[in-house]
Image 1: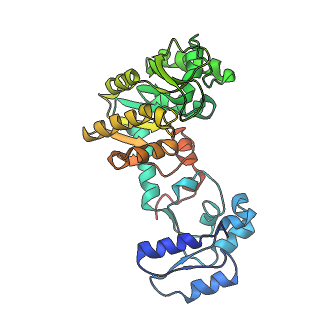
Image 2 (image 1 turned 60 degrees about the vertical axis):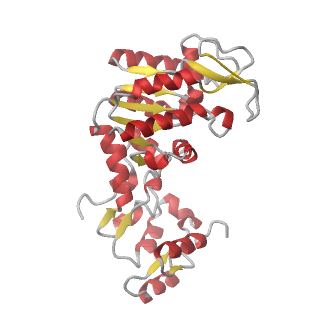
Image 3 (image 1 turned 30 degrees about the vertical axis):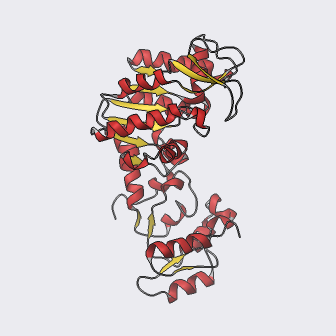
Length: 330
C-alpha cells in the first residue's frame, strides 16, 4: 500500500478540479475496460508500474501490454528520463507520436541548451561530499565553462591534493590524484577553479558541535571542515559577478545543520542577485534544489531542475534514453 499511487490520484484530482480515477493495475483487462469506458476529458491514473520487475527490465511483453490501450505517449517525467524502462523508453516502440511534455522540453532547453550554447562567461558551481560522484560532471563542465567553484566535502580532497593538512575532514584518498589532474587540466585550458579560502570547522559531525573559522591552509588536527567561511562567500560573489550563465550542482557545506548552512545559502543569495541582473541561473537537481527551497530563494532562479540523476547525466553530456526514444518531430 505504501507504494500505491492512490495519494497521487487524490492530489491530482484536487489540482485539476475533477475526479481522477486510479486504475487497480497498470496492465490487463481491468485497465483496458476503464480506458474504453472513459469519456472525452476524463483522466485516469495507472497504478505504480514498478510493482512489476518487468518495468525496470524494459521487458518487451510487459511493454506491449502497458502500451496496448493507448494511442500516443507524452513523457514529462524528466526525473526518470535517464532510465531505459518500460514506461520511459519501451512504450515508444508501440505508440506514435511519442513526444515530450513542456517540463521535459524546458529541462532540456536549460540543462542541455544553456550548457552547450549558453552566454559566456559561464560558471559551474560543483559541490557535494564526494569527488567520486562528481568527477565526471566536473570534467565535463570544465570543458564547457570558463570558471568553476568547488565546494562541499569534496573541497578537502582538493586541499589534500595541494599538500595541505585537512584535519579529520572527509577525504577520498583514492581521488587525490584525480583532483591533481583536474587542477592541472584547468591550468592547461586557462580556466579558473576557485576553492574556499576559509573554512568553518567543527570538533564533531553534529548540529551542536563546537566551531571555529580558519584559513583553508590551517585546519587544525582533530577538526573537520563542514562549510565555507564568510571570506570564501565574498570571493565567490566577485568571481561570479560578470557571469552570464551559472549552473549549480551540489551544496557548499552541511546545510542541513544550521551552524553550517551559511556557505550554501550565501551562494544561493549570490545567484538570486545575478539572476536579477540578467544572468541565467540553473539549479541542477538534488541537494542544490533543497538548499534553494530552504533558503526561500527557489523562485528567484531561472530554472530549478526536477531531476537528480537525470540532471547529473545530462550535465555530464550523456544521452538520456527516455529522451532519445522520442520522435524528433510529432
